[in-house]
Image 1 (tube, rainbow, N blue to C red):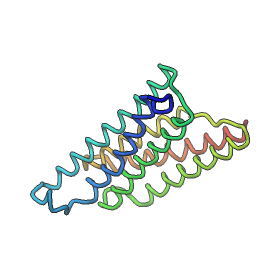
Image 2: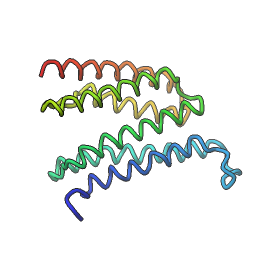
Image 3: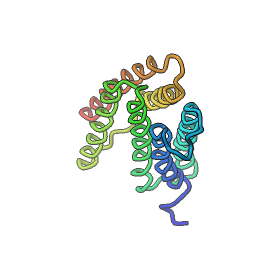
Length: 180
């Protein structure tokens, strides 16, 4: 196995493959092969896929740091996999009317903005490191998506908490960029 295709990068690629599969279970509920399924089974499978993908997110970063397997490819794949998973989750949840389009718009706008800011920072030879608020917002976003997929109580409240944390962490990235 080449250095670029190490275990952390393989896990990120696996997460990338899981994102459209999760989206499929969220939005394609009329698929004739599964016509006899109760609609909740689609939620269960989408939720299971999301949990598996979320766990690989933790382990790919942990393994990369612990075993010194951080690569340039991984620096691209990991955030791409994160964004694809969140996009699939939020898009699917808006499509099945479980998530506010405004909340999702605010979250995704922040994600695109910060991704652009990081590209500009790299082009200027700067690094905008992840903040604790950024890590917390990711965890809260994941919990909110899980609750929304399962249609559990307080899911909408968690989504709006995620929006607040997402916007705050975006502010922190912007502040840190200008301090550099």
